[in-house]
Image (cartoon, rainbow, N blue to C red):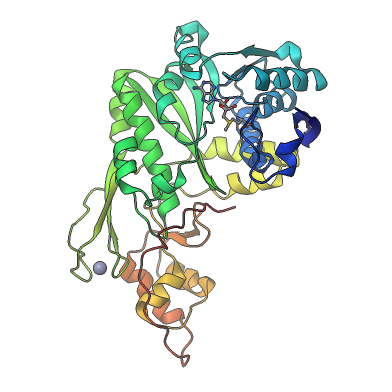
Length: 400
Ligand SMILES: C[S@@+](CC[C@H](N)C(=O)[O-])C[C@H]1O[C@@H](n2cnc3c(N)ncnc32)[C@H](O)[C@@H]1O
Ligand SMILES: [Zn+2]
């Protein structure tokens, strides 16, 4: 396999030449995706902000994440890189040498869950555990929860975005025990389904979780949660689960405690979603500290991702897409800014949603948003044709 040196963050990585010339990169003999650099940038910032000393990169591949954390996070003392692909770990070891961080790195040529389960003992757990599979992280959830220290951070990537975002409903029910939505806030719903699955898997083992951060970027969803062992913490976590109902006809959303099968606005049949995590998704002080860590390292996109989460707590677990509301109401496109202003003047909280390409989060109801859109929509332009409120079935691209 021909390898090249590839710079990412402040680190030089040895990667297969084909992985930087082919899109998508080959999965064999080893996998490296340069397009996932933002995912790793956010890990560097979050790990630095957390003050954790040990990290398990439990699906390390060529060690891009693990070597970067060892090299770019001053406070880290030990990074363990796990992969069942020995060739990938050989590259990880060479990259660690290249960056002179081999003394901070250990390698386990093992199956991820068996390695993580072997570290369930109190003094053996990691401060941070990362799970980065091809597809769903659901198989590794219990092992990863077991191997994370009390107060430590577990991060998970899911690339089965089409499942979590409502394109394959039956698979989502089977894999995550939840009903997703294929609409304009499907990435947020997917993130909340993933958090709910983690919460339920933890609860089964008397482990609670506290969500810390989440993002939806390119083709994947990503969550960070603090792990809190204890039966009472597990029970408290389950109180953060709920359900929604969304009306595909008029766009109203009900929940998270009182979803309805008939829409309260138009009376037609709604679509259910859940169970979802309906509590706060962000630990504000950690996200702000991580944003500063990202900025200090020149990781500006990561800083933007983290900054976009500030203030998101306290909003209902959905968003409104103003273009979509305009087409529902058959009025000309309204400026988002004018709608923001109108809602704010009416006393509502409003922010751009961090989870979708477009849309706003607000504590206003659909009817109140529709009123603001009506007021903001430019008068005299010809009305638009009515569009269905659901998103295109194939659309599962996360925001980039
Ligand atoms: C998406 S790649 C990881 C990419 C890496 N985290 C990065 O940022 O470059 C998934 C990796 O997990 C490894 N893997 C998948 N399932 C595994 C398992 N059950 N046990 C150990 N390694 C596994 C694969 O060999 C592959 O290297
Ligand atoms: Zn309705």
